[in-house]
Each structure stands twice: as C-alpha cells, then as structure tokens.
Length: 364
Image 1 (cartoon, rainbow, N blue to C red):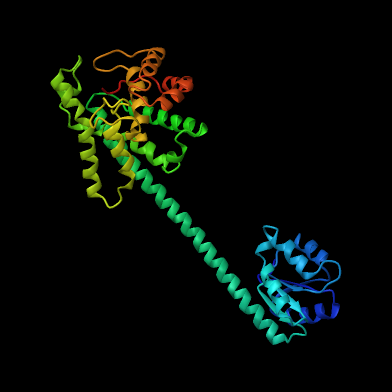
Image 2: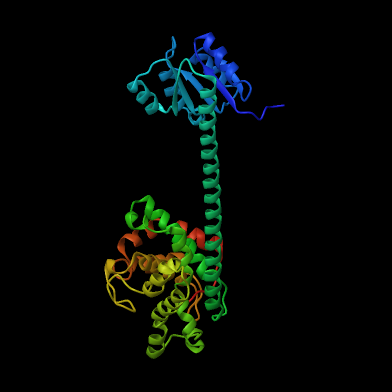
C-alpha cells in the first residue's frame, strides 16, 4: 500500500550527507536518495516527489544544470527544489533562485532547522496547489454559468423569433437558415482576411444568436399587411418598412428591462440595418456603403438569398441560379461588393446548406 507521507529526494554525491539527511527526515517523510543528477532523473521516472533537496557542487552534472533540466520539463518543473550548499555566496544564491529554487539550506545542517524549513515549504506548496485547484474549479463554475446564461439567452431569443414567424403561419426555417448562412459567410470572410479586423472584435456565437431577432419588428405589423398574398400598396409598403425601426424600439425596451443586455447589441443593429442598401437607397436611414454596419450588410445578402429561394406570400420560390443572378446584379448597388464576391465564390456551399435544411416559407 502506498504511503500517504510526503516524498522527498535528496541528491548529493557525498554518501555521508545522504545518510545524515535521510536519518534526519525518515521519521516524518518517505526519503529517497540519489548520488548524482543522472540517478535523480532515473528515479523521477518511477516516482514524483513532493520536494527535491539538491546539492549544487557535484561531479558530472552540477546542481545548476540539474535544476535547469528539471524546470524545462513540464511535470518535473512543478516539483519544489531546495538547494543544499556549503557555499555562502549571495551571487550563487541569487543564481539558484533565478533558476527556480525556492530556498537554500547550508551544510552542515541541523536536523531541527532542516525539518522546519521543509515543513514550511511543503505547507506553502500545499496551499499553492489548493489555491490552483480552487481557481480551476472556479473557472469551471464560471464557464458553466456562462454557458447556462448563453443557453437561456438563446432560448429567449428563439422563442421571440418563433413567435414572430408564427404570425405568418410558417416554421422557423427562415431564421435557422439565415443563421447557418451567416456562420458560413463569416468563416469564408476570415479565411480570405476580409473584414477580419472587425470580425475579430465580435463574439461570433453571440452575433449568430442575435440574428434571430433581425425581423422582430414585424410583430408590430398588422396581419392584413404581413400575410397579404399579393403585392403591397405604397401605403402598405411604407407600413411594412417600419418593422426595422419597430425592431430597434422593441430591443431597446428589452435592454431597459435587463441589467445584462450586451447580447442584444448585434440584434439591434441587425434589426435596424438589414434593409439598408450599398448605394444609399435602402431604409430606414438611407445609409450608404460602409456607413451601413457590417452586421446589416451581411444579413442583407443572406436575407435576400433566403427570400428569393423560398416561397413568399406574394411569389413562388426562385431557383438557386436565378437568385445568384439577382444578387450579382445587386453588387455595388444593393449589396457590399466584397461580400457579394465572397458569396458568389462560395455559392455552391450556400446552396448545399439550403438543400440540406429543406425548403420553407420566409418573410417579406
């Protein structure tokens, strides 16, 4: 049965020092001896001590060389090392401490002093391990809590988004597909280092999650407009366009009601700008070019692609190729040219996602 006592290795080329040291410590600790640095490393292959008492002046490999090798290896680097020396030299002490030793004990040593110094350092090491374990457990708890909060936020957003979609008597296909398109889009942009600096500042998971609310403002649009089977009149179209500003207002109301609203930052931008156009003719603000936030420019393409390739109350679904023609024609007019080029470059991947997720009705 393995002992639960602390294990200590004494390394010294002098057999007398090894014997004296072992006899002094044997009552309290499991003591192992090594007459050289080479023997120490052989011993370390079989056991991991709680402390190493290391002589500095040894033939072959000196104590300094031994500690350098110890500290360069992952597992041995954590073993506390106390130097044993008959040299009383501040420069040597500083050198040893800089190499990673935790203390010096001068030879010849008294039994009481040796025991007390070892006891103190083992206590410190135990407290360090306890603090490290506590820190690791705390990180796990925080990570789990963060994950739980993220899941809760996502569930809330998904519920609100599905409520909006249910008014049109459709499934969640539009939201799920646009989320998949956005994730795909961002990966392609990063691989080409396009808008990488800005994307690097985002929490991408939070952005994808927030995209579920891009059409939340439609919850305020009257049924006779939202579900109208034909084209909208000018008056009805003007009313429909209000879903962008209504979306901003709804999200701002949620922000005022919760102390933790950072996860809604992307959602508000998406809701308010996904109908802006590159040439400045979009709504609701008439933003132009890169005045339009990147979130809105991304959503503009995937939202239109999904609208074109799925049935709407006022039209049947277009083919993938037809949708590509329309998006290509909108390059530099409705859509960001850089984003359009990436979308067209990887159009087969977007089509693959569309086909794998099946057809579903979308929104206006």
